[in-house]
Length: 289
Ligand code: C2E
Ligand code: MG
Ligand code: MG
Ligand code: MG
Image (cartoon, rainbow, N blue to C red; front, side, top):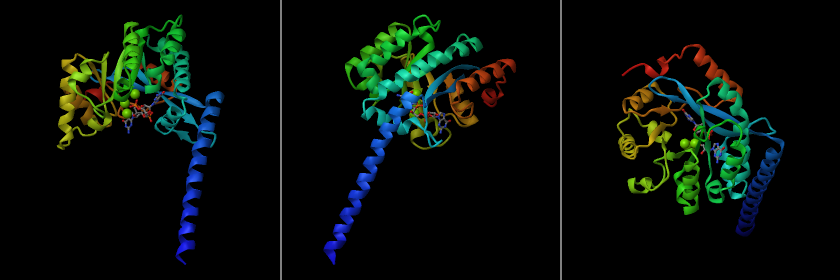
């Protein structure tokens, strides 16, 4: 009776693997279709000045509107796209969408910047950056209004990646290291990178106000950024306490659900106009210490 049972177990395991593979493959196919049909939307999360509550820009975040009606988060499909060599196509779609959206945004605030996320693949092949320069030409958007975000992994992959970012920076783009603190980071390593901005990862912001060991890490990150004269953006701010602490520690910019979630371009423009109309209501950013 043992043999048939183990056979059954094998058969079940194989069936599970086949289902999983099939789902993965069909998801890649669906992603290809989504790119063609324009089912990838770009939402914008405001980036605010912590001292004044003023909105200074936004981060462009891609979302997939699946035919089933469900929104799929980028963490779910960007890794898939990378494995199948499709990251570049997604980035180019995102940057074309951003540049198309920016016209109306700049009418609401001419100084605004938009931050784009680059995957390691984008940095290696450089096509996304070439598309960016070509698409930017003649739009009236200045290079300094396009920020480029890449993770530590993106910078570390190859020398070509760092060179590409150095060139982008020479053209005037603002270059940011994203999710800082989650990878392999040291002062000497950071010093060698072509950087303007350091984004403090949400995992450290989450620890503000707790007395766990990792709550002291953020102090070191801030020290590091300050000694390298990098501008800081704190990510994932959810509480007033976090915002107050960061402001007291001279972190200039922040983003998070305390201020706003990512939203469609039209809503973001309305958000900008409302804030301006209300003469800025900085209480959300200014209350407390
Ligand atoms: P990221 O660049 O670190 O973006 C910040 C993520 O944190 C976003 O998730 C944002 O919605 C989320 N977030 C912001 N504030 C809060 C908060 O207060 N609380 C919580 N719980 N979450 C907050 P999202 O949009 O799901 O994006 C996830 C990641 O996917 C991004 O992390 C980025 O690495 C990647 N990604 C997004 N768009 C693109 C893109 O166009 N291209 C590439 N290559 N990657 C992208
Ligand atoms: Mg980012
Ligand atoms: Mg981040
Ligand atoms: Mg992140």
